[in-house]
Each structure stands twice: as C-alpha cells, then as structure tokens.
Amino acid sequence: MDNVRSMERLWSVEDVSDYLGVPVKTLYQWKWRGEGPPVRKIGRHLRYDPAKLQAWATGEEKEEEAA
Image (cartoon, rainbow, N blue to C red; front, side):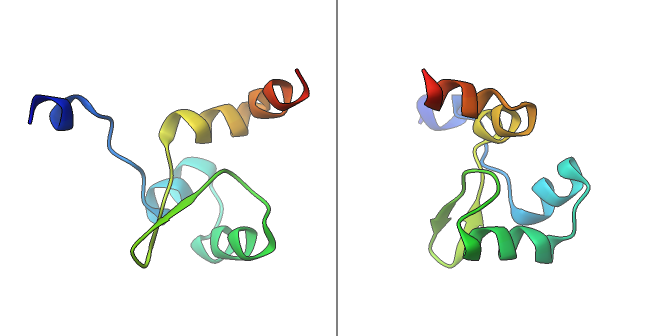
C-alpha cells in the first residue's frame, strides 16, 4: 500500500486544461487526431502523467525521441 501512496496521481482532462490553458474540448480533439500530449485511457477516462505532460509542454519529449 505504501507504493500506491508514493505514486504521483495522474491528471484528469480538467487538470490538464487548467495547466495548459486550453479548453477540455481541445484535449479530446487532440486525442482523437493523435496529437497533443501523451495520454492514456483508463476505463472511459483520459489520464495524463504529469511528468510526461510537462516534458511535452516544454518540448523535451521531442528531443528524447530524436536521440
């Protein structure tokens, strides 16, 4: 149970919308088009890893892919 508590919570669409300053609808459109930040679907909900989202937002993800 300690491992679960130490894990960072995944962000919801609303959390990411607030963080990026874009409408929730835009996040769903990006997912549908295969664009935008990395996202995973858990059940019927979209969830975002905060570290991967921040890397995407700062452009670090593209640098890692190119290496």
